[in-house]
Image 1: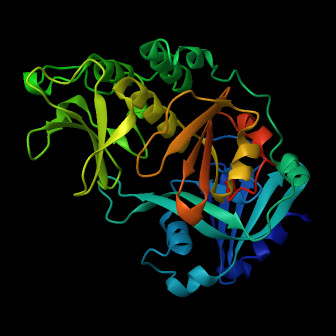
Image 2 (image 1 turned 45 degrees about the horizontal axis):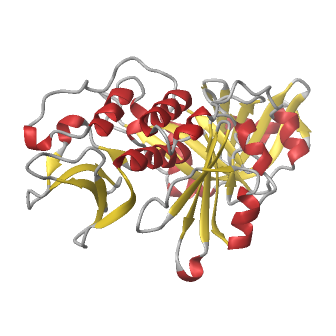
Length: 373
């Protein structure tokens, strides 16, 4: 990696007369007629722009409108042609600027703020044209001592006291927040959920993310019967592709009822675990999908998944999700789920961690498509 001074880096964007400089938190963006330069600070943090991994650099906004227009192509003065100009990425270290090469936008997020008419760029992730080596990554993102990681006390209760296992996992994985989710309220008697689901809502009052980030358990006030009045619908896929429900009887759902999975207009299929086990599986799946640090590889062989999971502890539950049977494995601060994609599609693996140090032991286990360790 080459070392530049500020002027050398700025010149990558074009002539000084045609350059504009912007400060975005701790980062700098320079836009010119020859390209764009993004400079982030060295270090490892989630709350500011930084090098995310060997393959990615993250710019955290809000970004000034010209920067958003240049990077993600919103209508404006720069136009679509400027999006094809190179984006140069660099990291500020005590000796100067480490040049990482060029990158391309792999994903971004925008929001429309009150009073604005155009969306503001809030996050932009660049994929490096040439990934960094691990030693180079450690130079510009020095490893930090790991914090205390969530433990595995819950695992011993999975097949003994599942209510305790669920509470231990959720409270260990998610930091408590101020109460943001509605407290349990009175619902129609025939829609009254079983105690296991009520416990889940109580946990969500101070840890709302446990209700899901990929799929979700519906808030208590949104529980409803299906069109035939036979099922209590309590969960759904993020795009509405499937729902989870419990069978309604004259006495309401049973103490630990069967959970039914139904995709679009297909017939309902029973999950292999009853509600007590399902809620734990749902929590593990959502914890891994919504973690701050993730790794995934979506086409693995059975032998590769065996190698990936050999040093992890299996969660002793039957497979989750009838559409693509999924098993869970864990370590302190880590949840990994392995999904059987069926036929010749092999297996997909997705790991989520509360700190990147929990992912590090998996770095060389398989060839990852994305790895935040």
